Image (cartoon, rainbow, N blue to C red; front, side, top):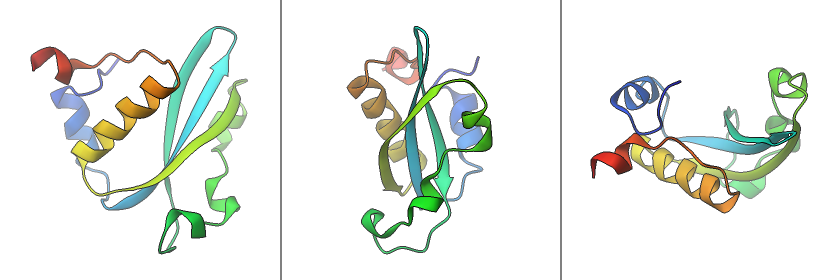
Length: 105
């Protein structure tokens, strides 16, 4: 499992197009809770202008058997801001993440 904040994680994230809107989803199946994120394809000037169809969960999320909730939509400008956003969403929803960057600080 790739650790959030690891060099490998940031390397993979460097292939992501920034700035982009990201939709953050809370997924729960039994006692397992996690966060899923997808890039939102929208030319909206702000998050409030994004049409719902662009925010629908992916097919994989639907067929995972998880309960799904959209918990945030945000414009993210770089990998560090993305990292901070993932940490905040995880903390808000009580999800423990394997956070290697904090361990090295």
